[in-house]
Image 1: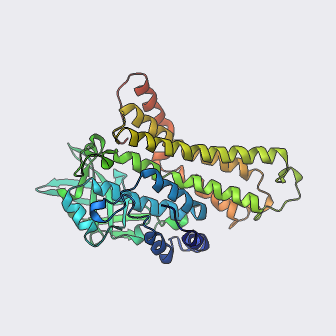
Image 2: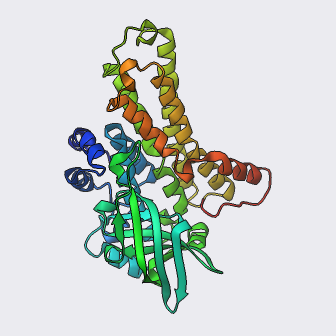
Length: 370
């Protein structure tokens, strides 16, 4: 599936409004939902598309060419339907009882979580940051560590939490990635939780096949792929000469150094896109059960995308002209958006490089989220 031109035009037209309001415009959300983007990973049995993963991420890139914030936030919201498909059927029935386009945000970092195991579930409270798209959602997935057991994700309805407006940032403003707060402990039944090791081991409640793909392999791509679209957008600004007027002829689009920079920037983005598609094609060829070595490689390759896209934007920013330094300049906004992506823990390649190299050399895998 491809996002329609009319929806992409709407996304682009509302981008500045979303940046000012620090949330995606409601009509943009409705249009993207209408395209079937949110139901991409929803099981067919619940009315979803259950379509090839790479197609989803190509759509996310297209959305990001219009507005990276929209692609980031709604991409994250949509990919959660893959994790929910792995959970207890009772949780799936709750989420998709009214249709396949469930809107669920997340914050997986457990640092602010307080978890107490009780009969039949967990008492959960705390604070979680970076919950992208949460203003448009009715549920949230929250990470936490249960003492003497380990990490779980908890599926919590909107009635049990509040959203605190904390999202004042240098980029990706329209993602509305505010804090989720549960002041007094709430009960989360076991069936509305997902154990990290179940995700790692491929334990789920779906027929063999599509949902055998490790959950992490979907999530680690959703927080960097939109940067590829932002680089494509930046290249289109160069082509159209938007805001790039300059008297410095070394910054002319016909200058050999500028042309070299454009070529290198494009290649960094397009190579990243091709690696993503190849990885999912390899997983499909392996019946969605890649080896630990391949999983470690895929995670490392995904973590490099943000760095590659930052390098591409830096190549272009140096020759973007004097007006690019002014606040509100479209090129500068893109530069900030791409740099924001690097702040996500999944986009720091250092640890993933070490783990991949260790497994490649015959060592033991240390990453349970791949």
